[in-house]
Picture (cartoon, rainbow, N blue to C red):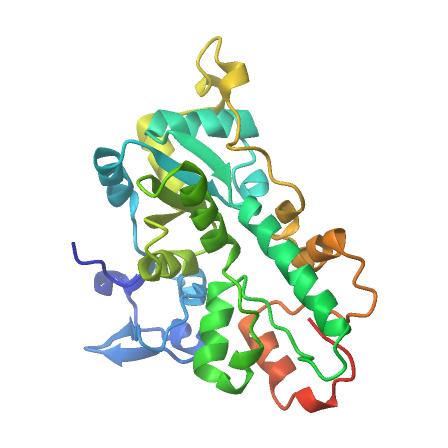
Length: 298
C-alpha cells in the first residue's frame, strides 16, 4: 500500500494567504497551481504549517484506517503511548485510557517513556565518559526529536556528527517491545507529534503513528467515554505493560530529558542547554564554535 507524505494541503480549503510559507522554518512549501504545497524532500514534518494555517487547509495524514487494518494482520497490537497523554487526554485517568484503547482493539498498552528511560540511562553514561576524556567529544545534541534531527542533518549538517548515536525514545521503545514480546507484534505510537508519522514511515520497527487528535476522533465515533471505558469488575486489569515508566515521563517538559539524565548520574562536570523551537535552535547553533568548548555540553 502506498503511503502518502504525513502533511498535505487540501486544495479546496487553501485561500492563498501564504501564511504557511511565511511560517515554515525551512521554506519547504511552494505555490503550485495557485495553492501552497508541501515539498516532502525539504520538509522536516514539524507541523508548524498545520498549526498556523488559518483556513485549516494543511492536514496531517489520518492513519486510523491503517491502525484498524493492523488489527486484522497481527494477533497482538501494542500502543506506544506518549507521556504527554496525562495532559493531552486529561479527561481520562490512565486506567480509563488503557481500557478505552483496548475497546478500540489494541491488546496491550505501554508507555513510550520506557524508551526514554533507556535513552536517558545511555546518554548519562556517554556524558560521564566524555567528562573523563580531556580530548574527547565536547558537544552532544539530543536525538530525541525526529524533526530536530532532520533539520540539523539537512540544514545545519556541520553539526550532524554531534547528534548522539542513539535511537529516539519511540524507536528504542519499539525495539524493546519487540525484544520482550516478539517481533510479530504490531506497534502503534499515539502522541502529539506529526513528525512521528514520518519516523514510523522510515523505521520498520514502528508500524504507524497516530496523533491525539486522531485518537479523540476515533473514540468519539466509537462512543467511548471516560465514565464507561472500564468494564465492570475489570478495574484492576487496566495496567501498562510490562510496567510503568520512571524518569522518562519527564520528557514532554522543557529540560525534562536533562533532568531524567541527571536522575541516572550526577553529571556535575557536564554543562546543559535547553532550546525549544526550530528557529531558536538555528539561532543557537549558527556560528557556534565547537572547538571553544572546554568541557562537555549537552
